[in-house]
Length: 568
Image (cartoon, rainbow, N blue to C red):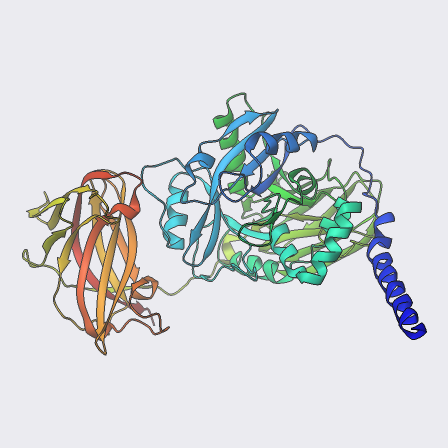
């Protein structure tokens, strides 16, 4: 009996020691003091927040009240949907905070957080590049969400022209702590919310490498994202109702630079914020470590021109300026093309200047010199893209070799569900170019989920020598359509599909076969058997719209397959 008591004693001592180990740091964490006011040219907010419009806990009133208590100027709401109509339509001033409605799209390759698009009667596509292009057509922004998340990572790295990446995601970071870490987090959160949340963050080395690699090919921004839900799912029916919106709003902030104060019109003001984010004119802060009020980062050319973050210049002789009006020392790392080129430690002056004399993409990371969280990137700025035009390399030309496959006016038949109607015509344009015209009237049938109209060609053909399909398209109204091909191998039929956007102007469209998605047939991981294509379709269906009845016209010409060529 004595031995059992002794073991219990040691067991409880071990538990007490473990708890002390967890809570001990909480009593020594103190946010660094910054008494500077936020400059007039900056506004402060948070990005990537979920409400009860999708899988978040709170409504928009609760969210904006939490933002008001944290003295934020804006909240960018990104509820799930393609788009989430309630969320996208929620842009407004509420509780003295600007709520900007967007959506987080669930695509074939991961999630894309977007804002600044118009609400249309059709849905955004599942293909990443198509979704990005759609958002860009409205001058909106798109950020790849939690790119290396252990549950929902991004997988299509061939995309381009998106706005940027979430280089640090609070929710994605928290998922890395595991079951044991969750227990520690809960205890710490009950005692010191700020410490508990910051302690889940890590230096996002891999995300930053991806970001830097993209900036070698174009202009992309990095953003700190909360992915706040104000709840943690335990099972499908049980959620832990924390961390709160208010606690998360004090952890990761985005500081956006604007030329003039926001207007009373929420749509005009949201457009100003969205366009400056799209330009990269903002920086990111782990606000729970310290406020960054008063910080600024800009580039001054040799001629005296002052350029904000996200700007480009051919003048590579100048200085990158840091305004640092803080009462605590910082470490500054300057990166060129993703590589560390300069580091200064324990810097304690109000201004730092770095001389630039070479082309490159320059960005910075700033750390507190002391404290438990000195290895976390307190501030990450967006890049300056400096490129001396005299250094520009001449690249070899590449292009497509195209072969027409549908130049016969009887190439297509019309197919549709019983309730819908469609016709096909073969016409000639003013410049004597033949085209197919499909007129359609889609109509939903009772107790039927799908309805469609399509141009169909059911000839068997071998396209294994080609890389994709090319055509020109126009539509009586802006609408998204599908091109589909079907294969047959070992008596197993597979269907592959990709969407395209058409409007009143003729648009040239090239879609590689490897970008088509499998929508029917065994998912065995194999590539499409292009030697056994048995049908090709151009169609419109209910998946591209929220309406139960759709009318329109689609015109197609110069339908070809292509291969690539490269200049030697």
